Image 1 (cartoon, protein in one colour):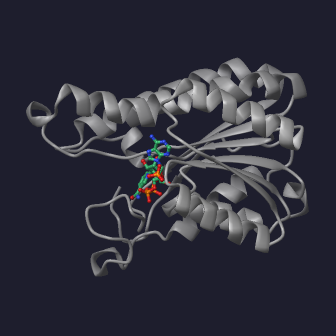
Image 2 (cartoon, rainbow, N blue to C red):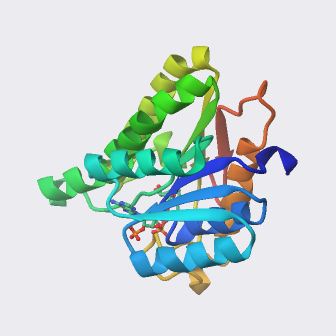
Length: 239
Ligand SMILES: NC(=O)c1ccc[n+]([C@@H]2O[C@H](COP(=O)([O-])OP(=O)(O)OC[C@H]3O[C@@H](n4cnc5c(N)ncnc54)[C@H](OP(=O)(O)O)[C@@H]3O)[C@@H](O)[C@H]2O)c1
């Protein structure tokens, strides 16, 4: 994976689940890592692992729905490493209820993280990537950015919106040689679900490491290749 050596990756939601697995995988490849999440102690632990694995790593603890926090984090990261090569918009969560039971505040919270968070981080890195005439934004959506299910109106809507945003900025950024990729995944055994990670009911699900490997594959393509979309499922899951 020589192509990723020395590259700077910003990963949101790096304290656990897919984002943590991705940070740990990338840390074995001599990268510079910028890790973002709210849980400081969990993020410090991932940072320690990343540094022990031989990568440089800075962390920013805060909420990606906060525009000031996002802008300051990206500014500091750019100063620290001199460039930002890849942004992975991974932080996200879901609330699963029938529409009539969803409160206005719950609606705002899910959209603020899944959709506005993706927008804020992207907006913050785009000027640097345009100036570099290179860069890559990889958004972790879900297969429910392309299908819906009962009880999923809020989460699906947030992921459809994140996907639409991604498709539009792909058009805006292509002339500047900035890639935009979206990962649509099925069930992953992370902390995302009601049951804990490692629960027996998750036995056949994707592992966080499967997602990390898929994202690294997307990021590791040469400059003339872009994987616009990647759909990934556990073999058992119907789609
Ligand atoms: N698990 C699945 O089956 C599945 C399937 C398809 C798509 N996805 C998507 O995959 C992505 C990662 O989820 P996961 O499965 O790894 O879930 P997870 O284990 O719950 O991890 C979510 C991460 O997002 C961070 N986060 C959440 N809200 C945040 C906020 N407002 N500001 C900053 N960080 C925030 C969390 O950290 P803190 O709590 O420390 O802030 C955590 O690091 C999400 O976008 C999810 O929608 C998951």
